Amino acid sequence: MFIFSKEAAILGACVFSLVGCGGSGSDNSDSGNLDPATITWTQGVFEPSSKFDQQCQALNEKHWLRSWSHETYLWYDEIIDRDPALTDGVLNYFALLKTENTTDSGAKKDNFHSSLPTDEWRAQSQSGQTFGYGFKIRLISASAPRQAIITYTEPNSPAAAQNLARGFEVLEVDGVDFVNASTQAEVDVLNAGLFPSESGKVTTFVFKDINTSETREVTMTAQTITGQAVGNIKTFANGEVGYFQFNRHNAIAEKPLFDAFNTLAARNVKDLIIDMRYNPGGFLQMASQVAYMIAGAENTDGKIFEKTIFNDQHPTFNPITGERLEPVPFTDEFVGFAENPAINPGTPLPSLDLKRVFVLTTGSTCSASEAVINGLRGANIEVIQIGENTCGKPYGFYPTDNCDTTYFSIQFTGVNNKGFGEYADGFAPQNSTGSEFQPVRVPGCAVADDFSHQLGDENEALLSTALAYRATGTCPVASSMTSKQGFAPALFTDTPKVQDNRATTLIEQNKILEY
Image 1 (cartoon, rainbow, N blue to C red):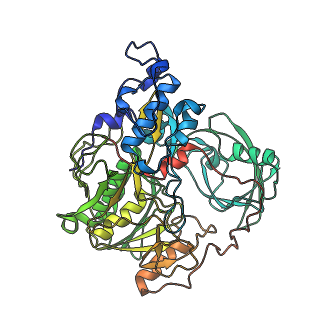
Image 2: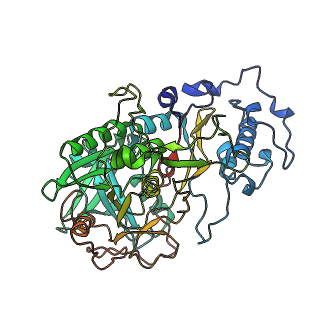
Image 3: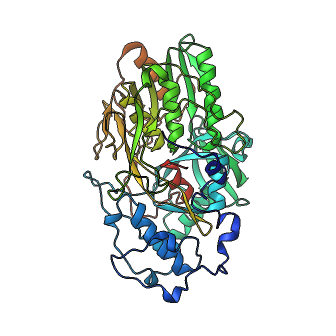
């Protein structure tokens, strides 16, 4: 069975060695460190990564990255082997240790190669903490004429204190016209304001409420935000249909998920709508817990949730843990991802014992969220998808610390109980039109995200379509990215793009294993 170690959960990314955790990794006085002057590079010849592990001279670190990538990267044979000494900077060298190949449809294989300081990764994965104002935005058009709108706000955040909510459109950031800014200097101001990388950043915004056209100027200070992973637990159709919003598979989500399913089980719901439209992914084993709590023991007995597949150098043993490869089961007990969990690990999970589930999706539904869809389909649970094409990430990694930096490099892919895992272009509702890629078609309805109603509102387009489909089995006319508010992707010009390049965003959009 899949093994989860409580120690790894507490330590976050420090899964290889305690050296380097908490700041000690930068000490170069260890007599066991190799003298960089003695390290040589021969193209195509790789020494064990353990030879360079936690040796924090720049060249030693780069040789560790080179060997570690060769050992564990899923597409290791597509990396161009370069002399580490010829690239300035450890992170610049790491950026080269990835494939540049594309899928059959022309999409890049690997968009999620990234790193974070280890202390930031611990805060993010264990407590759901990120820097910001507490609002999430959707960039509908990143180049001028730009469009961005708040999708939801976090409780007890600066955004919530300013009464900002879903449906507020960005007009200005620190005096710069968000829609029409055309120079890189202006766009740098937009990016710095919208996507702060540390607490204390003070930013003035102008927003427009798309429902009333009211404009508002607000000034907010970025702070550490603890996101709400699970919320909006409701029932519809005279109590027969359960609903909740599930925003990310991180450590703090486990207890709220446990509570949400217990609540809905007590209400004896007959159907479930799970809103993962903005869930970028996270722990794979948590995805297996969610799938179990939907389907229950009888529907998952004797079936696997996902079989993990590493590169062809490792057909039998996990290259990270050294253990024999075993599939991830449908996890039926509380694991205890977070430090000092509120429920004892091993406590049985509740379940709804459903034969079908409705999943609300957008292009921000990624990786571990897609694994829920794929794992349930592998167990013959009907998944009805309402919304937009998911992002397409059937890959994952073990966060790996070296010298106080945690690296995220794709190390495995996965297949469900039926042996299927080819969804690199995502999942899309059956009646979707206009995709340039090749998504896996799933029963359901293509519906554009509706910003004129709050999440959990029975009149919101995705939720109302799910309820209608349950009643009638039919879809409305398929909508593209154009929503009822008239938002549509603009024709991209050559103006600089606004984009969230923080590593935290890239990391979240993946499946994560720890041990």
